Image 1 (cartoon, rainbow over the protein chains, first blue to last red):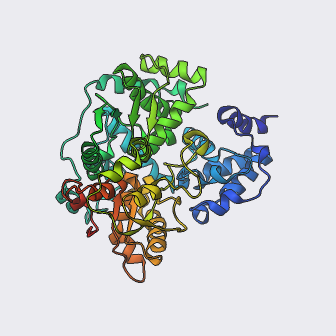
Image 2 (tube, one colour):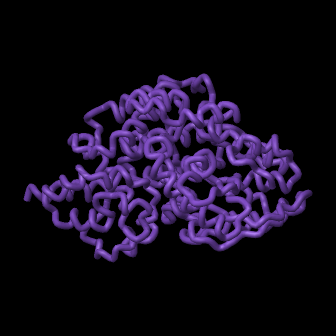
Image 3 (cartoon, each protein chain N blue to C red):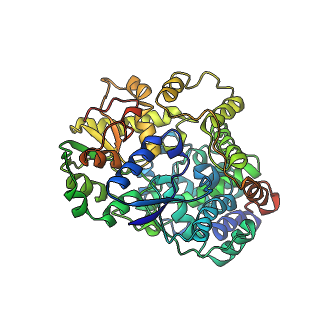
Length: 186
Length: 279
């Protein structure tokens, strides 16, 4: 049945069997951001168990998958050892490839992209560059202007990036993975 | 004692005091840290949120380099890097994933590198040996804050107890400190949302600080750069949400040990914190 296949893709890719969840709610009880999510983790598990496309899309459109911090508390406490954080990683990549991202994801994705751009070019994170790129992506130009001078005075900011020698290797890794549509998580 | 050393990006920038204190303590204890040559970023939260193969390839390059450079064991002080390296090593036990990553990297990868965090390094060195070198006991009541990435997922990291870890507490007790039971030992500080969702970090980190402060902690002790920067650099914003401001400092385990070993505050990077450290 077509409506089931998205959940079975999720299962085959992450090894998570959604039917194992018996809705005890420990994940939600321990999730530090459950109250900020459209659907807390145990509710999200239930939506997946229904297997409908409608509910799957609800998840891809939700802010839950973006607010998940991957703190792994849910997995640590799950009596069935269901790897919800791994599932969240998968659902995020699906949400992007199907262009269903919740508006709350915008600053989070902007941060991730700025972070990865920095690594791609220099091999290491260049924090000043990261913040500049993040601000230009989100137009949050005034953010953190109060802490940046202090960071500089405390010697916490490099004005120039640190570069690794084998930057071609970095470019190759990016070209073969995130920039290669064929290898994208199916 | 000689061991490989992967600092990671935070330790070269916003958390350079962690690097300084790790290096200073290692020197005092005569541990020879051999920094991995040409190391790259582990990819952190950004990589695993955006692309699985990238999130495996970046840590795999680090481990392959260590193997190539003849290192059998590396210490990874940053809890986030430690977590990414350990999880990747575990994921790459799967042969198809390992083949794919080898193809991306074009480097041999054996997967037998031993990866330890800074608490494990100090444990391996021996608490008796540390005790013998104490010149100024660290006579303070503190809350040891482990956060998420040092202890979870337990099935892969196999380090300490998942709900009430004790390894950092034990080290603090060795140097003369008093530790406490408290409720937020392994709760998340908001991690990588420091810039993208500062509001959430302020909420979560505020809860952590408040509990430690209510129970009379003179300081929080950490082993993760993200925890430290959220609890320290975001203190101004956190205090705005609290009824009364909290001024207890957040220091790295290596800084606490360094103080007990008689190493100067400046050498340990204690002047780099936003919240003044007077311990």
